[in-house]
Structures are given as C-alpha cells and as structure tokens.
Image (cartoon, rainbow, N blue to C red; front, side, top):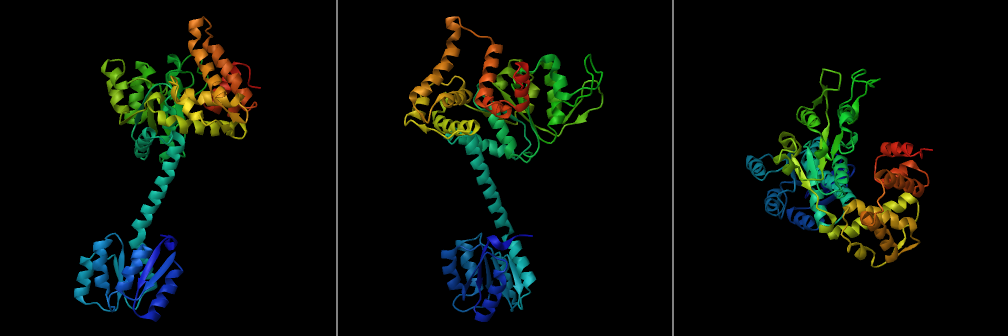
Amino acid sequence: MTDLKEINLLLVEDEEELCQWIATFLKRYCGTVLTAANGARALESIALQRPDVVVSDIRMPVLDGIGLATQLKIEQPDLPVIFFTAFTETANLLKAIELGISALVPKPIDTDQLLNAIRQSILPIIQQRRINALNSEMTALVATRCGRGETMRRLAARALQVAATDYTVLLQGETGVGKSRLAALIHDLSPRRDKPFITVNLGALPEHLAESELFGHAKGAFTGADATTKGLVAAAAGGTLFFDEIEAAPRSLQIKILRLAEQKEYVPIGKTEPHDAQVRIIAASNRDLGELAACGDFREDLYYRLADMVITIPPLRETLDEIAPLALQFVQETCAELRRNVPELAPEFTEHLASYPWRGNIRELKSVIRRTLLSAGPVVDITDIMNAVNRTDTVAAGSDRNSVITLRQAEEEAVRAALTAAGGRQAAAARLLDIDYSRCKRLLEKYGMAR
C-alpha cells in the first residue's frame, strides 16, 4: 500500500466544521495537510506551499472547484486534483472529465474511498520520487568509483543507462584505464548486484585449460580430471561474467563464448547435455576489437554479439581533469587500507601529478599514490611524489641500463611489498595489489608467503 506520509495535501472546503473534520482525519495518514476556504485562497497556498495533491469541493464562493481546476490545468497540469461534492450535475461531471480530474468522491464522504482516491492519484508521483532518489544514489556511487571529471561523467552516464538492461557490454581502452572498475560498477548498478561478479582473465588463462576453467568438466573427461568441476560460468549463475582481455581468447574458445552469449548455454567437457547459463556478459579489450574482427584476427560474429554497447575509455593523459579526484580518492582508500590518518597534502600535490604522461593510466597513478604513502610522513610533499614516480620510471627504463628483472621477480617483489604494507593481512594485500583474494592466495602460496 502506498505510504502517504511523504506527501503534502491541500484540502479546499468552504464549510469550516467539515473542513476541520476531514483535515483531522487526513493528518493521521498524510505528511502535511494544508487547508483553504475557496479556490482563490487555494491558488495562493499552492504558489507558496507546492502541495503534491489537491482535494477540493466543487461549490464554493469566490472561486469554485471547477475554476480552480481550470486554472491549475494551465499553470500546473501535473498536479493531481480530486473533487468531492454532494451535487452530481451532469455539466460539472463532464467538465471534471474534460479537466482530467483524478477522482470524484461523493458526499457524504466515505473515508476509505477518499484515501483510496488519494493513493491512486499520488502513486505515480511517489514512484517518480523513489526513482529519482535511486538515481541520485547511483550517481553518487558512479562519482565515487569513476571520478568527477566531465569525461568520466559521460562514461558513467552510459554505464548507468546500460546497467539496468541485460545487454552485453564491450569496454575498450589501454591497459590500466579502469575497464575492470567500470565493469564492476555496471554490475553493482544492475538488478544482478546481489549475485556473483566473476572475472575471467583470458590473457592469463593457459589455452589448454581455458575451456575447463570456464565451462567445467566431468570426472574422467581427460587425464588428470579426478573430479567433476563446475567452472566459472556456473560460479557466476544469476550474476555477471566479465571477460577481461577478450582479444586473447583462442579461436576454439571464441565459438563456445559465442554460444554462451547468444544461446545462454554451454556444454562442460566430457558431457553432452547443454547447461543453462543465466549470466550477463561484459567483455574488455586493450585493442579495438572491431578492427581485429575486420582483419580476421577475431570472430566477427562474436564481436557483434558482444558489442550491444561499446564504451571506449580514453587514456589518463587525455583526461587531465580526472587526475586530481582520482588521486585524492586513492589517497583515502590507501590510508584506510594501511589504517593510518590521511596526511596533509602539499598545495602542488595534484598539479604535480598532472605533469606526468601516466603510461600505465589509472593503474599507474594508483600505484604511485600507494608507494608515496608507504614512505611519506604526516605531510606529503613534492619530493615524496617524485621519488615514487621515479621508481616507476626506473623500472620502465631498466632495459636501457641492462638491469632488467624477470616477471617472476617483479611479481614476487610486488606481492612481498603488499603483504608487508598490509601488516600480513592477506585480504588487505589483495586490495593493494588490485587483484581478487583467491588469486592473491595463490601468489602467496607460490612464493612461500602464505603463512
């Protein structure tokens, strides 16, 4: 039942005792009940108080209900008006219909009938208010996750638009621009927000294991298949399956992803019966997937199936207005993870950050902020930032000085540093590394740091 506590109602009745009786009754249900003795007074009250609904008698001195409704139809055509009257002249009834009156309640008034008429007339307004409140909440979430610059606001508006649908979405952009963050945001804004969000990094998945990891397999389906596994598609049931680096998917897997996206079904290895897959698919690519499809380097039919909506995220160097809000956001997040107070930032802090090219985009910016805060004191100055950025430049330029380290060494060093900074807390280390908890645990075990 519609709650009337959030509405303001204007009661227009020239009989004072009747007006007080009805007003007293309605105050038990409505948020605010205003009164007026005739249509002219009602127009004054409406101009000042902006009620949500008007309940009016028809026969009144100075300006009657018909005159009031006629004026409101011109000035405020969306304001609901309900008539109650002891008179049922055909002319008044026809005029009420012509004016679009929401309801007509006869006198003597049946209170249940009056409340029902008010609820029916106000329902669209309450629903719209709740939609607006939800949109405001979502807009705030978008700003928190994506930043407040003009470019990201436009991208976030598209994300908000597509989130309410089951469209497949293709996110494109350089490494580190925030495709994973945007994919997670679309999921969190969607009706599937209470269901799993599963990431499949196809660039890191060995080809001979990809199909099994994705679709699962039956026991004995191949050598080493000692038990039946469900796979990541089953794990995402009812939620969102995010294919990161979709361009890395081998041809043999692309046809199976096409079936998954198009028919919402898949067949685990070693089985013959298809399984239903009620998942929403979001894909991401570091390259222009349309160009790859045109060149024959990616299945064209799969590209079109994935591209219900394509969102291209520009690199950070092209959206300098995003750097300051993102940097401040990362400062707050990192301080929360490290359980330390937010330090004082030098006046030139964000301006200095805007002077770098950020080849690694948002991911590099986040990394620099984290390194800065690990070693900085209660005040962060330009030197702290320069030291953190220079460590990034040293790694990037290492090949020129014959000081290249292996990927394994870099990975181990990053994991060890994150675990140390997180005080041994594995979940916090995963957040610092910007990876999911299960992957972090595997890395800790790999390098003997699990304990």
